[in-house]
Length: 124
Image (cartoon, rainbow, N blue to C red; front, side):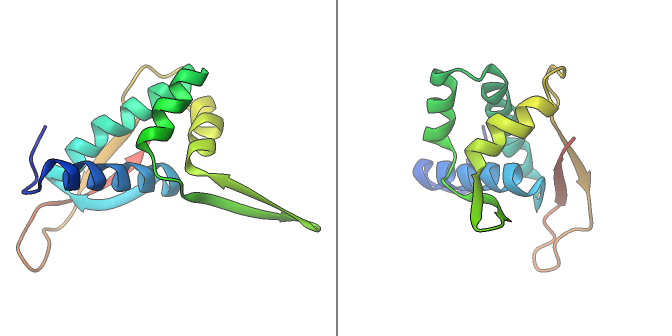
């Protein structure tokens, strides 16, 4: 694991945030070093989602942030889906027959300010 020029608690918060945003949005744009670490944590979360038992749900809930993934209006009621529900619902079904390799990274142009290599990290 890379240190990413951060202390351990700030590094963990960064990985939690990026992993949650990747699950919610399906893709993120970040530096290559961060993407390599986020890729491993995302794969672990999707594997927990595929397991689907209570222990796996609690482990994923302790890592992911409590963020709203989508909200749909059905007449008078509103259905809200969190990142955890999306992980254990649609993503677990989508990757049920896949044994790892849930993400892909496309290299893009370097960042303008400091020339850091940038990638677009996507769920396959």
